[in-house]
Image (cartoon, rainbow, N blue to C red):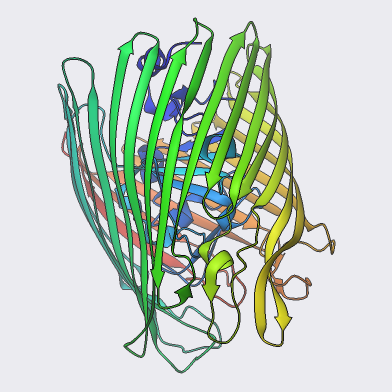
Length: 594
């Protein structure tokens, strides 16, 4: 195994590198975790308008949306809940510490360079909330030279998007500044409710500066700020008008230094903010704000040519404020972690351990072990076991309702154990994989009615998720083809019922081909039915949609793109009773000077 520095230098393409699975640079082939990396090239080729459309149907992953752009978006990774998936932006933990979820709908895709998806528990490296996996979003940047880019798009529902960016890397300096503006009139979000259009606006900025000094020390700072204004429907008052203002912000500073050929040191400090203010009929109603500050010290030490030891310290401080009362509004988490990776012959092993000490719920230990075996030059078998946990949110612990419902400060974290067996092939014609996995989750937190109309959370739930993922990428008669199939059996272990808002089967197929200066492509996305209630009586039908896309390179600098989403105008729901957009048409113009 190469040293961290040599490994990064040996990689010829950022497309094959991920840093999330092991907290250090590795090729996707070398990591023992199940990983998907989406690059900027793939994002642009997909013509996705938001993260929901981009990620939905990717292996092991499904997205659900409450009525269009800017509306609440939920994610299921290997059948786990949205609050059981850790999300990072440039290494900084984001999300609401009151809800425990991330506002994916407010993160502008125009600001994203690549996305890394790691399936399976990563609590041994990242601590709380990484039970289902980790999704890391990296903001825009380039490898060398200077790149200017401009985009303009118009489409259905009076959707307008503009984006402008300058990113570069020259000598020892890296820099980037990107702006985007999105507006849509939207459509009515909720069925049998106020029939007006529910619009959305998003204005965002991202930037970074990096400099490598003559002694090898590198300093990088990065930022992302997105402000959303959203109109939505509520079942509580269909005659009223609801809107909200939101802010998603991430700031990060990182210092990297290598005192010798075998030791890399990094120090990083970051802050994220999740802010939401809501209004009813243009009158202030409520606000909930989260501030998360973090510090990380990490060391990667090469122990010879075949093994690496990673160890370090994490510190996280959460602070919340809102119109609802919290008996406690801040907490600290301190953690130490270590990971050992080694190659011996055709075998690989990775062992990870972490100890968290949280001010709210005490100490918690997690660990993992993964074993890999190269059966042939093109076939690899990987077996892994890992534990994870989800920290109770501030709502779970400290929420105080004036009508009597309250949080429970005696809650303990949700716990998980996961097993995975993976077979991966990379023959001459492409790549394929089959992953079998089981995740058992105990002490699930459910809000229970303890008195008439009075609720309190308790650790009473248990779940088991059995699943299989299969993926293939190849080229056939000039067509690039990628297929992803996910089969799940997500069960409540107490009642035997299917877990809510989870489909047992999902399939996504992408095909693309270039004909000279013209590129064409299509995406087929399908999933089976799900249930929106714990008794499995409220059915959300399954569906299948087909999207078509075309791109015409007018010159070496100008590209015209067009997309038809939901070609056959299917009437479907990803969340029961919430509308989707029907057939939609979008046209965009892109400028990237050479």
